[in-house]
Length: 229
Image: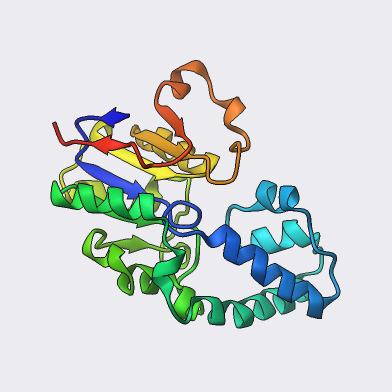
């Protein structure tokens, strides 16, 4: 697939640039051994794997108490560190890295907008992940959820990035793996490319025919070619 006339890319992080779903499953397995919760099915995790870490953990494990949620999230973050403390490169999706490199060679501006928080995440913080891997050569700006007033899919989550780079939304492509990424693109007036990393993407059936024309869905990024002309 070739996508033309693109001047800017907005990347999602989790599930798009990095295989965080696989890591999440491993960490949840360690957490439930200690917390006493029941290990959720993969289908349950997939259905709830979006939004903030707190939202995902709450929905995945069926937690209703605020105090209990704080304890479980704290335990999750403690165990998460070791999974991201070394060899961050191994968590990258090679097809995404290859595409980011190809776009960088064309001087296409690239931004990460993520609902993952930066503060208190240690080696798993978005900025650390980008800065400590080969993505640093391609992506020079990250907007994490705790550093912005508005989160995806609000179009204001990208801040003044479009204006600073003199970008027309029609020439911007949002690349993600969740419905919220499609919503962000539609709210911006941009195009969306969604990757089916873990099977069908929930809620896409709610898109109208006009919206569907602006949202492409692919199995991977291996055959995607993006050009500025």
